[in-house]
Amino acid sequence: IRELIVFLDVAVFEIILAYLEKRDWKEAFFSVLPQRKGAVPLGEANDSSRHALSEKEGEDNDSDSS
Image (cartoon, rainbow, N blue to C red; front, side, top):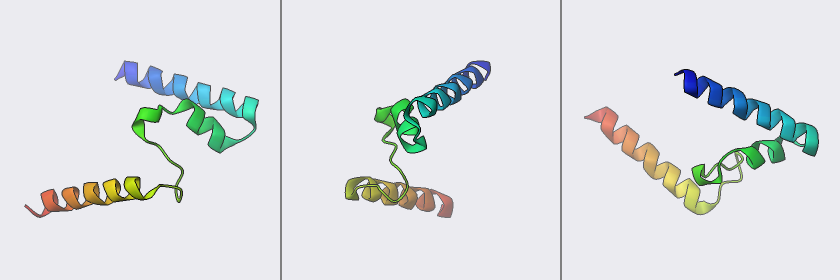
């Protein structure tokens, strides 16, 4: 848990530094967040990511009903 807290502290610090450099929160977040996580701004997800999200939600609902 301690390593996770240190990682989050560093990530927050990097986002703040990126904001100070870019003066844009959206650019700051997405320049720091790992691209492999597939993070996209709300309302800007492409069709394939929306489809993947709806499939994931469907799987979660299926597991809740069993």
